[in-house]
Image 1 (cartoon, rainbow, N blue to C red):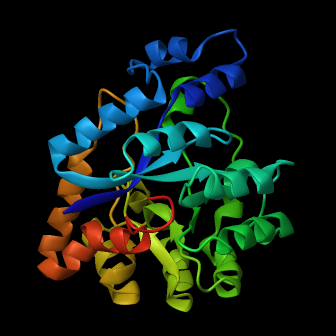
Image 2 (tube, rainbow, N blue to C red):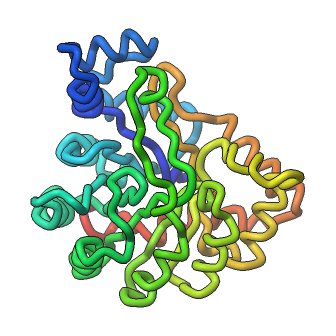
Length: 301
C-alpha cells in the first residue's frame, strides 16, 4: 500500500491567484499555457484526473494541498468527490484578518484535515501570537494536524513566470516549532522535505517532541547543501531519531501532464532497501503512518 502525504492540488483558483499577482490582465489559463501545463478545469474534474493517476500507480490515498491562501473550497470539492482517496490540507496566512475564521470553516464546515503554515512566505514567525491562536484552534479539532514548511522554500511555477518570491527563510527554522509542539502535545505537526535543508534542526525538534513528524517528499535537492550527504544517510539518521512510525512518504507531485512522480517513490524505496529497512517498517513509512494520522473513519470522512 502506498499513501502520498504531499501532493499539490493546483486548481483554477491557484492559477487565478498567480495571474492576479503578475498584474498583466492574464487569466489562469494563460499562465498554464505559458508553463506548458494542462489547465486544471473545475475541481471535480481535476479530482477525477488525480484519482485516475493514483490508480495507475497503485496509490491508495493522497493528501492534496490548497497551495495558495483562500483556495480551500477547491480542495474541499475534490475531497467531497472522492472522500475515500483524498485528505484535504489548506494554506492559511496567519497575518490575514480572517485567518481564524477561515481555519475554523476549513476544519469544521469544509471538513479538511490539516492547516498549512508557511512562515517564510507570509513573514509571520512561529512564535507570533497569531500562529499560537491558529494552532490552538486546530488543536480543538481532534484528528486535525498542522503542516509547517521549514527551510528552503522554492516554488517552480513562480520562478518560471518571473514572479518575485520575497521569502524570509530565517523564519522557517524547525527549532521555532518546538514550543508550539510542546504546548499542544496531542496535535500532530508535520515538517515536509525532512526540513528542506535544516535537517539537523528538524531532527532535534522531532527528538524533543513525539508529536512532530517528517515527510519525505520531493527530490530533496537540499541535500547538496551538505557535501557528501546522501538520501540513504538522511533516512538512516531520521530512522535513528524518529523511528519508522513518524516518517510520512510523499512525492510533492503537483501539475499535469507530469502527474504523480513515480521516480521519487522509486528513489526512496531504493534508499530504504539499501538500508535493509524491514518490510513492516517500510509499510509504515509508505502508508501506515498516514492512515493512522488521517484515519478514513475520522474527521471529515
